[in-house]
Amino acid sequence: MNIAIIKKSAIAALTVAIIATGSLSASTSTASAGGKHFGAALLGGLAIGLIASSARGRSRSYARECWTERQWRVNRYGEEYSVRVRVCN
Image (cartoon, rainbow, N blue to C red; front, side):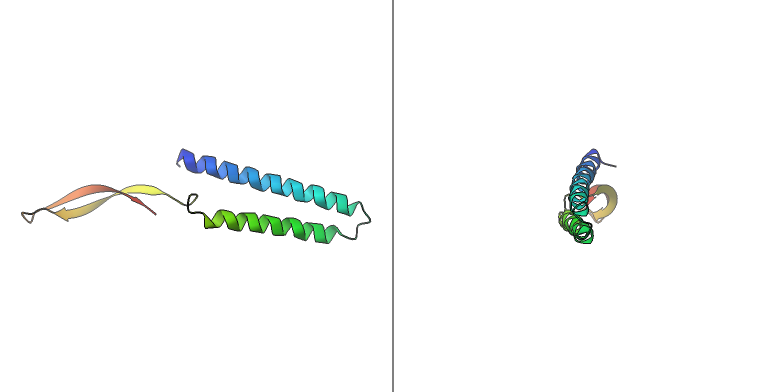
């Protein structure tokens, strides 16, 4: 794997962990207030997580992978030769 992909994945995991911790602390404070609003806080935390994950899915920088492959070309004399080409998605 590429180092940049690993770093970006680590940053995304850290962001999700921070959001999850924030949602748990919010749900704990509302749960201690009588236990009536625990479900609302839990759903709010899940909604924040879904929004964060959908924002991560839209950016192309996380999904970019490159590789080399061989392509065949023809020179001006009609002879075929292979060339290594870098291809990125």
